[in-house]
Amino acid sequence: TILALARLGSPAAFAGVIGPDTWGAFFADSFRRQGVRARLVRAPSGKSTGRVLSCIIPGGERSFATNLGVAVEFSPADLSDAMFSEARLVFVEGYLVMNQPLIEAIFQKAARHGADVALDMASWNVVQENRERFVQYLEEYVDLVFANEEEARALCGEEGEKALDFIHERCPVSVVKLGSKGSLARRGDERVML
Image 1 (cartoon, rainbow, N blue to C red):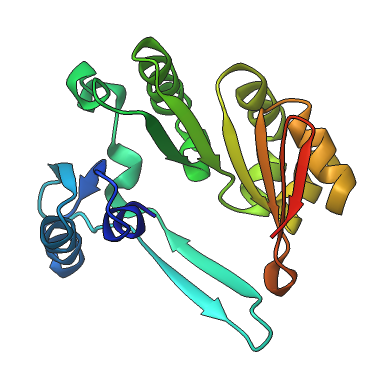
Image 2: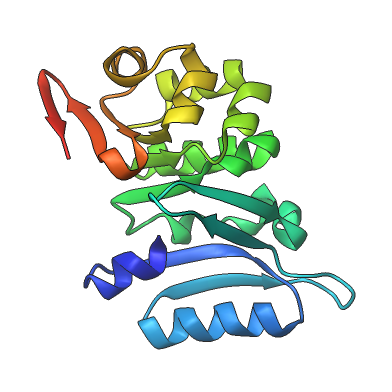
């Protein structure tokens, strides 16, 4: 997501942990080449960089196999106020919900610096296991949320427009991704099918 924003010409920054391996070097180089300001904590030897295998089948449906690797070691102590001082939007990956102190520190620093927060819900099973926390975060911190159909269903037991409405009651800008059928989005009374 951050590399895509940088390619579109938006100033972008990334914070996370990488291992001393080929994947860590790859990510660090990719950020550097695309002009992304990266705050990368380097894990000690023997630790691996997190990565995701994305499987896409005909018709556009996709599934992920995720190995968070050393990403789980990123902590609130790795966050500085300077990282948020120029941010207008802070994009948070939903997998961070499993590290409650970290995700809440990110939300609080973003709020303190006046940045909006965008949240991608990560995976239906992550949402299902942490439903109450996701609802709380939508109500208290998140300005823009992205959920696919399965994640929306895990959050509220609804689909399509009903899921969009449930999410929108808790978050100002809501997007429910419908795979090859596009996306539903809502901001205030404005609804669009993309």
